[in-house]
Length: 235
Image: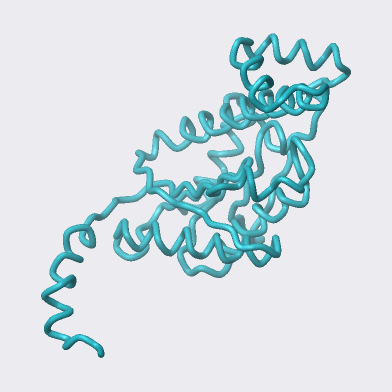
């Protein structure tokens, strides 16, 4: 039997306001990450799967085109999507931003992959001057993941267990992993750019653009590329 409405208010509605008024000012990123994707992606190609990368990019693009929240860009790598907002949807309410972004991306990615996936989201407030450094750090993480992933699956391919491969890599510097792979015929500098540097989806005068051949954000080309996107969005 349903509870009277007045009882429901006493039980919960007053407590909703504890977090519902938490707000963020723009600019900010919403970072969306996959939950339990290691198990979910067991039957995908390793260390990278182009089909999965396309699904992540498609989910980011769909969010930018159809969610109504209008971030100016999405930077993706691995199972991560970083959405940059220069305005404040829902007047910056954190609960709304987190829940709707995570649910939208989860639904879009589930449809694309043909299996139910779960994403979480968190809001990261920044200053205008910090946007580039945030993306530089994210791209550096994409590179570290790239080196580690190739090293890990190379060792698995030689018969090591997951635990032994992890232990071996834990005791190696990044340059050591790079050299180990080079000796096995893998030149990480020659792998696809989207594996090493991620993918950017952004707004331009012609609509939504996907860039799979990103420059390094720490270079002049990378800084110019980002400044053009930001300047166009702020006009």
